[in-house]
Length: 242
Length: 242
DNA sequence: TTGACTTATATGTCTAGACATATAATCGTG
DNA sequence: CACGATTATATGTCTAGACATATAAGTCAA
Image 1 (cartoon, rainbow over the protein chains, first blue to last red):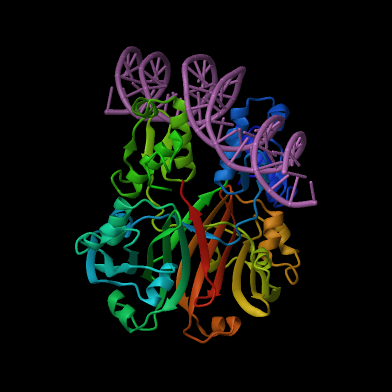
Image 2: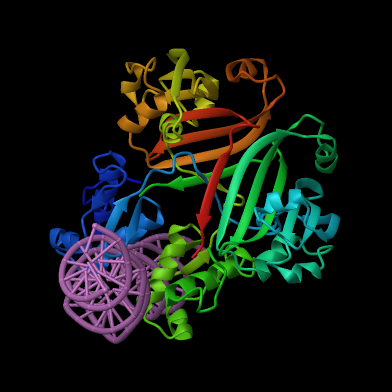
């Protein structure tokens, strides 16, 4: 997101092209919806090959600054305001990567015909069976997060027989089911009786909540709610422009 | 971020390569620090040109999943754990985009020599003056968030004379100061007396907290803490694989 | 042992083409 | 005029090279 355009900072051509366009977008000179020049126009303007321009535009597209449409051109996207993007990952990998000892406990597992609440939560009209799983993840024996998950068995039949007493469902799903879309919601709640006990915190203590829904081409796979102790666990992200 | 590797879903080669590597990273098969195969090895394995492999790896690097080092190779990055990436944007634009009426109130503004706490919060050794701003954003007259901000005047001298009684400091900064790096931390707290009053919620009610630090090439620009009512406001992100 | 120099190598960027593909725009027909 | 078929075009992907550049690793001298 650098605004610099001088050759000293942007030695390479494609970065300069990218930065030039980015600047016009960020300053509002090219508002959302504005069509940016066609590749062949930029090729002419910068006197380079199409691949160089394409690399610049592809990166802007990957960063969601522009949207590219075949035959139509490339357009400035509406800014994603305060949208949060959480990389999908399973908690086991997260804790292990922190160099802490990972612990897992299956608290409950139920296989049942989907109730109205289940269908609502999964966002499906009619559902057959679902698996409901509650489990706890800990780091160095300290409760790290509690997980409350629903898996749609019509999308993932194998989940009916998977052994979740040893492997966390998140890890299992990541290995067995590819996903194409996910949605995250972050919010905050105060711990109720059950949550407080599971996380070993006081009733009324703040909790960070992440709700994640995962789809595979319009089929719901799973809905999961993760509860973290809000005053100890923090989600940190650092990112760079340029 | 799809994990699919079948040709039906991943028609193009570079996406398949990217997905294959991503899967190994996300499942933990290739842990942080692991060196992924060299470009020429992937070229041999997939039987394609180097540019195709390079495009796959470049995108993974842009997504911060891997780090590329000349002469050394490409390495799996430490996951930003459950890292949250919040696109920088100001609340005014966010509320307006939701189609709701934006309201703004400056609660307090102080220009002062930086105290020890200020320096600590801004992460600077010695600082001259700072501006401390407290304000409230509302959507359709309902409190949306309270903002508590510190601006380093040695980095942004103009902020001393800016009129924050009408324009929110976030919007002002976005228009006046380019940033190169930002860090976000998300956590949860329960509302204290002052927060509860500002957000018109009960004391002890959950609040979502976003702390944001912004730099411009190693110079701290601003530190801001945003408090949202945790049970009403939600940060949502939807993203796609592929 | 240490520091300076050299070399090998993996990535970084770029080219001038190619064919594929989605789709906006046009044309033709009922 | 409405609607289906055709065409033109911008992007999507890919190739087989090229030279640049940062740097890990090895070499050699003080």
